[in-house]
Image 1 (cartoon, rainbow, N blue to C red):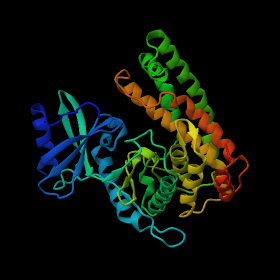
Image 2: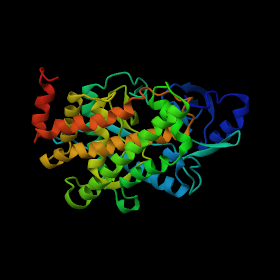
Image 3: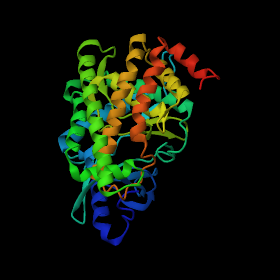
Amino acid sequence: MAVFTDITAPQYQIQLSKIEKAYGLAITSIEGIIQGSSDSLFKITTEELVAPLVLTIHETPDVTPAGLTNEAAQSMIRYMDFIAGAIDKVRDRTGALVNVAVLKPLQAYSDSEGQAPFVELDFDGVVKPASIVPFINGRSYVNSPEERIRSDDAFHAGQLLAAYLITASSYPNPERFPVCTFERYAGDIVELSEVEKGWSGLGYVLSGRRSKGDAAALTGQTYLDELKVSGQRLVEQWRRLVSQEDAFPRTIVHRDLFADNVLIDEKGRMVLLDFSEVSYGSIGVDLGVALISWGSQDGKLIGGNIARFLQGFDSVIALTAAQLAQLPLYSQFGAFRWETFRIQRIFSQDPYQMTMRSPAEFQSLRKVWQDLEQVFVDFSSLEDLVSWADDPDRK
């Protein structure tokens, strides 16, 4: 939970009434959901619907769909409608249906054109967007981050990504989406490195809450300086890759298929969340981002999960040797994107009130880059990689 842990308090009745009016619902019960995110989540029941819903108060609207303009949000909803209506019809290469789905928000103000799929609420002068999605009875790794990712889940996550990309590739007018560019993330780090008041907070988190003041500020500044160097190197590699030798086709990529953006329902179905980062670009971007999350944990590679994730993807979309060879580089882009996101969250919130599972994950991500690159050095096929991951003597 984040800020608003008791939206049922009397002072919030105006906000609840606004939510009910926007969605045409009468809320009969509401309870908080404990989840390690930057949003406040509530399970609600209504008079109109039998199934429960999840109400989200977005604490960081700049990194959620709620941060979109009305026009952009409407475009996003149309896209999600398309994906949700087609993704569950995708079949793997044997002809079997892939067991996946998309979670899309309910439409606010459904009787009026041009309204965004969220409602803006005022909490003591602070505007927070709210949105509602169906409640999924299942599990998520964000609820139990200490749990090791299961190899079968990694396999199905690979299938989910492939099914999404197949569906996205048939969406008309992909040029309406912004072009995916790595320079954005590198530029974000440069800007943050110039915000001196944020150095101390970042250093406090990176040190595991062991240092404050000047010592923490120096830690934060040093870390950002090192990350800027890494970012510039990756920018040069990115430009060369996308302009000359990219082995992957382009479509509307999700860009955010980390484990915490997937729910696994009680029947084992993978449900994809959060479309706030969709852009037009190389599908290598999606593979790199997902591989970092599903194939590593706490800064360590999980060889079996890397193989299983890629097996799942390959069961729907065949991977070539050239594409496998480029995955380490795309995974570096994914790791950098994750670092950038987490640092932005520290800068935008009070770091001394934040709870972070593993402050060391920032530094360890770069070790994951190196380890992952080494994994692919000797393997020209997915079969080789699977054999390596299954080797009982592998350490």
